[in-house]
Amino acid sequence: MSTHEKILTSYIKLRDEKAKVEKRHKLELAQYTEAMMELESYLKDYLRKQNLQHISSGDITAFLSTSRKATLQDSGVFREFIIENGNFDLADFRPKVEAVEDYVEEHEGKTPPGVNFQTAITLRVQRR
Image (cartoon, rainbow, N blue to C red; front, side):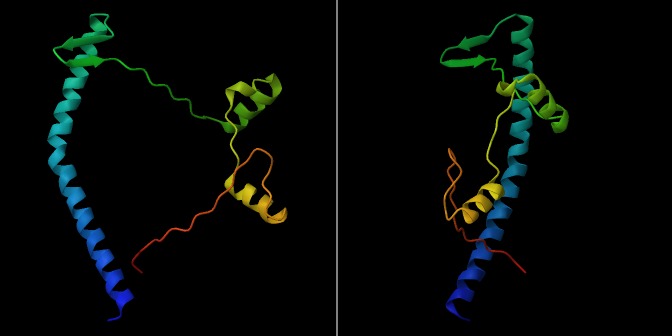
């Protein structure tokens, strides 16, 4: 067996063992995760009912934190709304990687104004 065959075989064995350990840990941690979720639910309800934002005991503090998320239900309708009303502050514009790559190739390595473009080569190992 050649050196690269040994390395590839070793890599796959290590990855498989790692996956087994991760699965076992997930199963082992499930009871703790479930118990913590129950306690979190109780504390959140308690804080809401008491109209509190936080509680403390010694050096431990629990507090409510608000997170927000906006997702697109219909991108076409949203895009039309933005353009028609000029509410561009409602949108987050990002460059499309494939389109920027095409632009860079077509323009002798130059990127569109205001855009950074990088490529990276990574190693992937997989079974056939």
